[in-house]
Image (cartoon, rainbow, N blue to C red):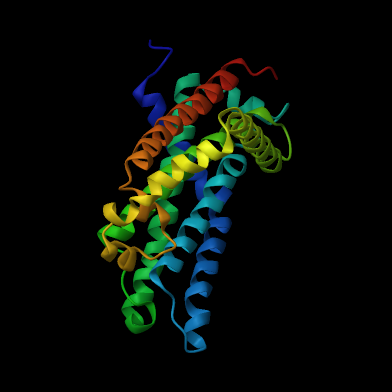
Length: 270
């Protein structure tokens, strides 16, 4: 018998958590869908319209809320001194528990939210196409949402780890830990800039931006909108390198959080 991973055991625990999913999280998901429906309807009732970018931003915001809260809502008792015993005594391995948690929080939850919000948006567009300008099922819209989803999955992995680290007020404490990390990184950047010299740093970025007009097609600015800076500057070589480094860091952070979660599930003392 394989004590590390068995596919049948993995399917069994995942199916169990899927069956319990809407009982534990259904009201929250329905509430978020209702908020998005109001977001679409209220401006239309007063004769307005809702732009594509505002709809994308709202969908990503609603999805972010659900993804961030999901670990504590669905697995908030796994490290509880008494209630956690039911979880630790499940006849599955630590790896199977971790992979099931990964599927439920990151894959299943994300799919449910994105699918639900896009269905609502599509129905709204079919009923009132002139008020919603265009459908969101376009290559550009899907690309923007895909990039944001990747960053949300990284942030969620931090909240999954926080769910295992903290026994109460999990979301609040995880947010505070993230803020502390951001402040620490900011201080490190300030120290580095002080060592290099702000004038040199300023001149370096000025040189990079001086060629923007040559590297960026003006039509892109009109299509993407001046607020979407990622699309405007992504053609600049230094920013291509920075985005590559960013994706590598995202992968390292997300993998590290899930490995930490695995270790905490395995070594947690009740």
